Length: 127
Image (spheres, rainbow, N blue to C red):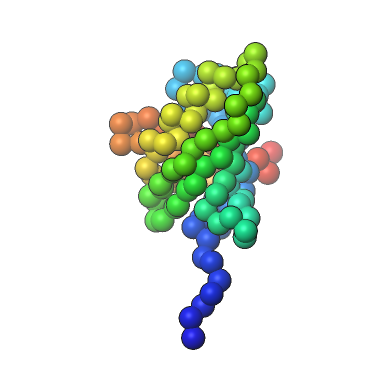
């Protein structure tokens, strides 16, 4: 008999909300002021679909994570204009699509690209 349930595409240690703490060209204070982060909890109804917010628009993307490799696609957002956070939002969207690897060390998630670019997050449930 074939199993009809949909498998999730994310390891359990990634399935949480993460706050952005490092992205080239931006300060930690900008991340805090914009409450910048990603939500990798997902839903059973839309496996592989996740969200982010960098302070203005709701962002969405598809992702697959397998043994240290990451594939991000279908990165998009709502189209509101905001006085702040637009530069961060644009940079995040461009960088996310380039990320191909991930690692989790303690409470930190690091995404890296072949070019050396990286983004670093801290688990939002960690004090």
